[in-house]
Image (tube, rainbow over all chains, first blue to last red; front, side, top):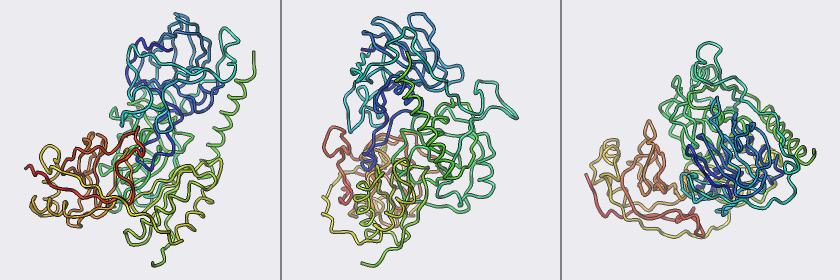
Length: 330
Length: 220
């Protein structure tokens, strides 16, 4: 078991997401940064569907009640295992009784704690993900609290990290565009580069709005959450006043409500919406949005459908390489 | 049944397409939407379909199929007259209009230039059809709202609309099934439960069902 000793809040059990229930209005949930979570599972040799813990607020401290292997990925999450420093994007064996403490990442962002075999919670509507809005799934439909005991499933195969004392790591992924720590303001300051495809209402926005959408450094509002990242900047105007019929939306869609301030939908996004959509963040860049903290900035750039598909494919290849590497080595 | 036009197609990123009807809004189009939504999950690479208001989102695995292939199949299926669908059930809901549970009732009346009693009478006289479930678990988008009650969404979405809120969004009616952010106008409250993740099916409403609101109180 994993005993939760302390949590900053909003740590939840997630898996690859709840698929097939959008037609009931049930959202996908799953990780904000699916790439980091997938790398964690891959390093452990886990099935891509294995559940893990997403950590949004730090510090996060747990004790393991049995021997196992874990992986820590996501933001630049440094910590200690019984006082010995651990590295981000690292996979390691842990012993019964050991305490893992994860510190707040210097530049913000979310972290992932994966365990060999995957977190063991009941499957609800086809998934182990916590649906925070609807309060079901995951660990009792809620964020983890101090004192919770979270089990894991037996791994299907031998885990590479169990054969070493120190484990192994992969190159940490960092958002392109620079450091989001406080003080980075002004010309040339940090802004996460996010690639988008134009969405249905793109042509309905004024030339000035489209120009501002692409040129502005959009500040992430503290009012952001797993449903959507709210952006602060110039209001984006449309040529007319469309009242759209509600329709399905996916994480990554950039909606523009009448306030004119865009919202990038995240993994807890509603399954349907009716606000004009200016663009959609490409799947390969959703993690970049997720790892840019409140107060940090985003800058959007349009790409062709082909370029977006190529970026998706490159990410799949990268994950396949990590999976292969996890099967090799000492 | 008259022939339909091909729907418009737009990309929602690399893994989803949105098909929107170019025909006059109504039940005939929605029957096509339901038919394609039921058929598409059997196609290669298609993961999910989400019917909307006279539109359809298809979610697919871009590693297993292409947007072009999905679009071609949807367009072909959209033009086929759908088979007969079983009639839905009638769900009757008791509503207290206005007051704390319906903070936007006065705004809807003001926008419609009607008095509150007329708004309540019009809203509870209609029989609505569930077009689809979406936004959040169990939320039914209802067609059949009297055109006099059509009211634009709020300029800034509310951060929290309570479960059971009876709501208007543009030409659509609905009942908030989970406490959630919403831009819809809230005009009343019902205490029915619309979603249970452990029940089969997990939602009270299903596409094709009918809904009628019964006014059990009006608070001003």
